[in-house]
Length: 212
Length: 212
Image (cartoon, rainbow over all chains, first blue to last red; front, side, top):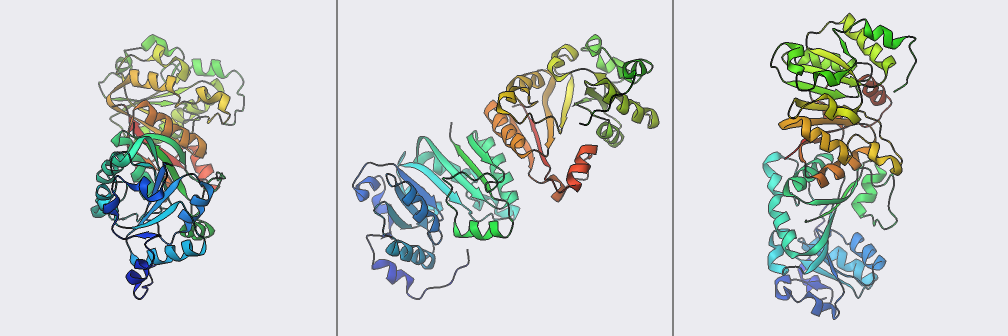
């Protein structure tokens, strides 16, 4: 994710508390109250500039979406998109995957999207990858029983690692796509990065999976 | 596998009982006796014209190899290769994957190679794929504890199916290669088909796996 700094991004985010939650821990276990309904809540970890969350929230209007992003400047871009395309079922959250258990209670999330997360290619950084065991522990805790994870990447080694790692963790594989755009499901929402990488000829991998 | 009929292939195979076992059931549980040593025994299911078994048996001289093939005409081609390149550690077997339990005793095989098996692309034929549950049952029976399966294919859907299916069966994944030739291990022995497909630009997938 190319990061262009936005002056006073934090202050600009503070102007829109109806769109951006800067301290998500305060709503742990009470996210349904924020939306005012009992619809399922899907979470994108690493939302980037918001292209995906805008598309998916339009496709699934009866689902609530939380989009987690750690960088103010990027979150600001996502906020701009939401201002231009208002949605009742989306909230942007400022926070880190590391702290998921501070933000969400057990079984609070129906689905987790991991879209083109940082592959952390060096072996010594493997524990930072969002499909490493310690993150899987967190996802398992916050997901509802039979909840699912949808993971996309264009990084072959990261996908190999994830398949092997999740298999070792005992997770179930619901669907594997080794070339997602070759037989793209209608429901697939492309991220900005995904469009750009696919145009360059990269292969897009996807895994839909969950805990047994 | 393109199949060119060889006249009297069966009779030609019968001339070389030191290379070809036409009734493998007779040696069930006694394959080590055939080789006259206690070296591990690796099995290729669907040996084709023998390119792989010739290469791998040269690479691993202290391992015994059994190459199973059902078509006489193809087995004849493999036999010709072995006559031209004699090996003490290879036997060709005439038989079918369907009947593995008639040919081998429990824990008799150290490793199984599945090289570019028929992908049986139609869903109604899924149970013929060599990574279908009923075949996994057989492999589990004949493999030693911690034995492994090395599976290669250039068929994306077949590889997706296999990953999902083996995960569901509870197998361990030791190594996944989503583009084997991009970072080809020195030990990889290419089959004739693999060379031809790779030259045409196909992606070669490999999974090394085993039973828990």
